[in-house]
Image (cartoon, rainbow, N blue to C red; front, side, top):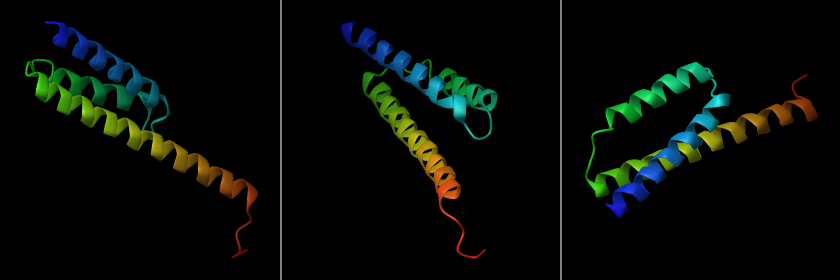
Length: 88
């Protein structure tokens, strides 16, 4: 039972972190929240600890991809702001 409760905490933490990252999602926060909720509800009945760990790892991968997306977007904005286009 201790393993299940620790995994539950990890899942909740992952959900909160993804919600936080979803605020800046390009298609909008509401779109992201709806998709996130659907994915978590789809997997709510999973009981196998190994499967839960796999899903957590996938969620962490998605977090890293979102962070990379946001950093790239910020980089492009800064580049446009500070470097002139050589074609002009």
